[in-house]
Every structure is written in C-alpha cells, then in structure tokens.
Image (cartoon, rainbow, N blue to C red; front, side):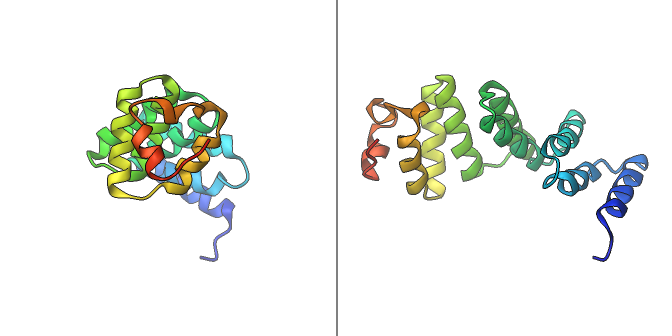
Length: 154
C-alpha cells in the first residue's frame, strides 16, 4: 500500500521474468490513468499469450469499439467469451453494439436479447437511439420490439 508506482512496476516486471504473465494486468493498471496506449500495449502482450482471463480481452474490445475499430473489437470480445466460457450481460451488450455496427444484425439481435435477459440497459438503449451510428435501429425487425418496449425515440 505504501509502494510507489515505480516500485509496483518494478515488481510486475520482476514477476514477468519469473513467468507470472498475470503481471501484465498490474502493468496495465499502473499505466491506465496516465498513458492509456502504453497500458493497452501491456494488455496486447498479455492476450498474445492466450490467457484464460477474459478481462484483458474485454478491456481491449471496449477500447477498440471506442476507436471505431469494430472488427478488432469484435475479435477481442468474442475471444473473451471463448476463454472464460461464460456469458456476461456487459460483454453481450458490447457484442450487440459492435455487431450492429458491422452489419451482423442477427447476431447483434441475439446478443441484445441475451444482455437484456440478464440486466437492464434502458438508459443505454436511449443513448444508442440518439447516436448517429445507430440511426434507424428502431426500424430494423431484430430490434423494433426492444426499442419500443423502453419507449426509445431517436
């Protein structure tokens, strides 16, 4: 608790020398606030080793979604579901968005249904309806009932 960030980084780097690849997550968190790209670089190194931890894949997927790199975001997010073999409403929500933007409407619809079955995303649905990238979503048959169910008006 009294360690400096420099000391924490040194511990993580030493752990990597001894094969503790989870230390990449520590390096990510050390740098996430001050140098996002450097922090994400540590996660890319981590996922290159194919960890069974879904967290780095989700963080990278969300980052790529934000950068509008939808294909890469989809790859990371799908990988997160394979390594953990578990479903998460949050990951399904992200997969819905990415696949809608990629034009994979059937899969996007399935992920939306899965996300909404396990969590509420009413406010997020309203925000999407106002997002230019999702213009017309309420007209698509895969999404029409969900958007009208929460009274979403674009």
